[in-house]
Image (cartoon, rainbow, N blue to C red; front, side, top):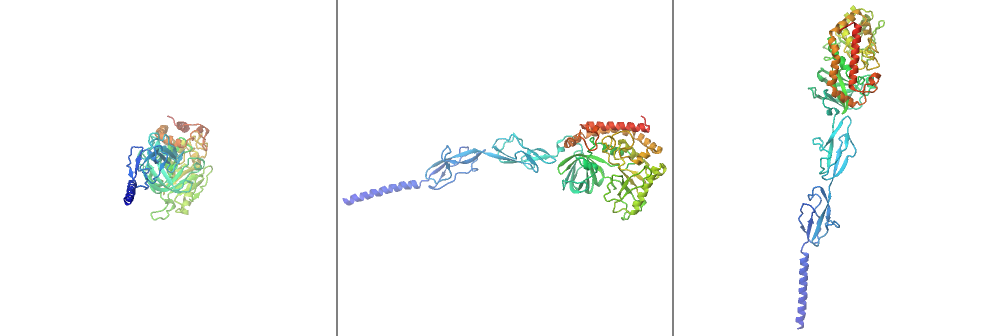
Length: 573
């Protein structure tokens, strides 16, 4: 009996162990379940996790919830205890906590400067009500775009921000924002922005025109400052371009050298233009400088409206007189050589040969710089010959020997040059002027040059429309107009061109109207010029505050000048 009792106890113990073991095994081998409450439309399946194992919940980006960032998972809906993937021993539910997504908007000024904050943060799906401006030298800020190529425009207050984004600034040249421009545009990219007078710096030039086929791309060459007082005293500077190869700018003939006239003291910007167009009406002034208005940019800096003109020089499409040598490069005999000369006192020799013709009584010419032949080509015999020739011209004028003078010079070119120059009463008429001698031929006056300080713009002559010559009197003209034969030729030529001369005011008004938008662009760039004091400008000019006033002033002055000349010459209607 004792054995039976003990055996039953043992069996009970064993049975209890089996039950306990079964319970433990059931508990141990039953894996807990991890349930995810996403708190958004996205669904995430629960996971069976081996007991005691760790598991990471989905990360931000694994679940799509537009406009929100997954901050983390929590073990209660109130987001108190953060779940970081702890060991699991029992079924667990975790809850996603979302925070509104913040986007960064970066404004890229693209070589410019953002005026204000360049980085902004906004809530996903909202709009940025405002956007900063941007500045870039010589250009106008046009707007912000969603790609560097500036294709799709960003509209502040309208475009929803749905992600981090970069916006790129778009700039335009000032002239691109002005309707009705008529003049072409010259874009110059210079190696150095510090352009100096007399020192060339390499550049690339592009020319565009909406009105015709005047388009040139990637022209290579050099640029430098030019002028005397115009370079020193005026903020708007003149320039000279020298291309590596000959270029036909605006149909004016192929050449390497071109001038960009600023016309700063001439607020009407029409005085040089008027004389060059006038001179084209006179056949004896064969090599008259041609011209074309054009907008100029240098390294994206808008410089304003310029008058592009031909450089006064010897050449096939300029003063076509040869270079002083024959086809084999040998120096020509002096009498067969052509000469181009800058006369007066204002010519810089740039290493060229200079001589000083003898004055005869009150008649002189000052210095003469030989522009052609070049200094490295011209011979002493050629210099001696042209010096003696100019001596004879001065002497003939001084002696009032009209017959000899006509043997030496093309007298019609003297008459026509006199009319054009005296018509506008150039302040520099005796200070600098050009003359050329054809090979084996006579001396001609021309090409005409430099008329911005004229017709009432400058205290340096031209302020009074009465009288012959101006502040730097041309002694040749002063003497010749007293000669009856020369005076008769002037009257004859004036009457021949009478209708054209009297039509010039209408031409000026038409030109001013045609280029109205272009001139507005110039004075937008040079804000403050109108109505301001410029070097040598007259008080009556300084008081003119609008462009039309300057045109009226110029036309009135010319009308008064014509009336005085015709009265002086005895010309009546």
